[in-house]
Image (cartoon, rainbow, N blue to C red; front, top):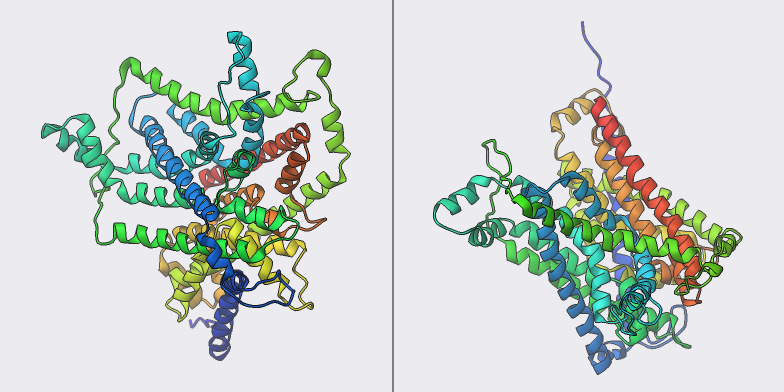
Length: 570
């Protein structure tokens, strides 16, 4: 019996593939190259977008000023110190969880990573009320306990900026290194100990060296994230004159009677160039070096028996969770029920802030915008990332390297820098393309920022799927889209779901790009919170923050629990 196989029309396929690749390149170029080009254009143009002006180098010559030198020094110094401290703390926490007999290690791992999913603006708001030198809750409690007028904590300082940045970067690095500890063959460390090395020497000469690819990648990525941090500096640095690149760009555009777009854009372009140099440095550090930690032999991770000290390590992990989650959330809850934060008398209890938020049309509009942009943005980004990952990892089509490069360009562009690039880009579009000042501007910014994450997640999932399954689909007549959706996406959907959750959280927490691209009516929750805080309404900010925390918990647990349940039934 002869079976007829329906193959796609060859001429249609030869025509459609170049068109599809061209469309993908144009889309990625619009999201990445176009704003980068407009960033360069704006740094050379003397007037704001849409206004006739001259081209000059005033923006770049201004970078050499003493003020900008201080901004650059603050940015690099704060990010470097934060990253070093976060890396040390993350390695300690990862070692405790993965390589010791500390009780409840699985629960501790969940608690340590939880701050990663909390939008930084929430913890910034909470610590601004916890660590205020005059009426901060910690200082009020300290004075009540000691009977003195002293100040225990002042977050409006360099230390405050670094501490808040660490609350996000420590769990970020922890996620990188904890699995590296588990994957390492303990025989390498045992050989070192048998040769006479102490535990400390073994850690530095064997364990730490073999983890260099992971720790170096985590260090560079955390340093870059520190360079683009906005919330920490705008809350705790700006009030006391500590400015970094992101806050300086924000101030040049939004806090002046006449915005200086040229200076802001030049600063943003310089920041992007610095990011590029950091990524090149990472590649040179690891080039030609071999770090084999996983062998073909079966093994179990080497667990250190700590004895009574296991309760000390348990306390260290719990203390981190208390400081980064319980204290901030407790402060938001406390201030939401009192008329003024810092005045916690019984006669000051009120539900007025909840009523004000409930009656606020701006809040409900921002909530709707956030949910809409979160769902649509995460879905569109994962679809785009899935297509890019397929082209770059599963084909040998011409142009795939260009596509891969375009998809990764946003790694070099902090949210604030991408925001100002897109601001120029959208403002210079023809009037027939009305993106500037609409939700489309925010959506496209979120897609650009999330595309590298989507590509990385889906490419890793595709790598686990044998190519013969895809070839079988094509032989039986399936076209590109049918194979992609019915085979690759169907088999890799758990990774797609995890990537969707990560991007959704990224959209919820994004502030730096949003603050430059929003217009009246397109505000998102993070923008509304910052506006309320600057307007002197921290109690209402606490109410909105609690609602965002509920959303965080909902989207942190429900999708991932659903994924685990579906996997267990396969």
